[in-house]
Length: 243
Image (tube, rainbow, N blue to C red; front, side, top):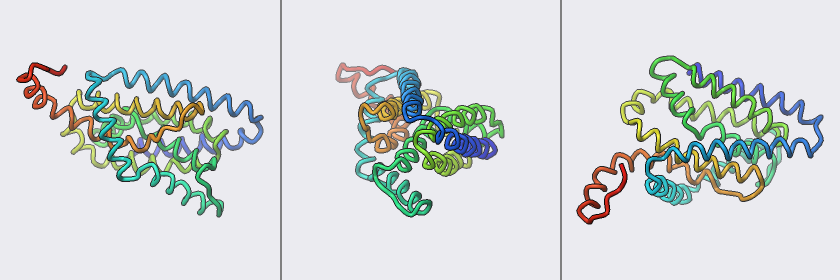
């Protein structure tokens, strides 16, 4: 849990610094910083998504995950959590408020990615939190930039980091026993596709309901495990899949 606690601390410190600096920056500079993060988010998401060994499998994970996420109402639940936190902090809330946008956007950026999964597993199994320390540094700078434009909601994303990464770390033994290298690769690719959606949101191009796709991270390793069976069946039909 040491790595997760460091990550939570860097997000809170970075957010606090960003809010102090952000109030002194003109709106055009804050927007430029946010768009810069959006561009970099697109680059990171693309590099992650291209790691897939099977685009059809990644597509299936995204589509199935999206359907399940919409059925569970994950996007609405995440926004509702943001509004609830805002109400407790400021006494008012709104679907399109900067607080909610900051909380939702930062939560997804900080928690969707291979460093979160691999770093949490590594920390939980061996106590080596080097990877999470690197992620914490990146998240600290990102939270500084986000909070300069989106405010207090970014700081409360530290709660999401604590709960999500903490759960992964505590369950690391089970997760590590179940995941193969290929499974982690496909989870990384699916996470990259979701991060692309976050980039589009930050650039004000398109509001993608990214949270709805989160179940895809769980579906991806399941599809990897089922691939040999599916492949054997399709070979009989003369339509083999790639490994």
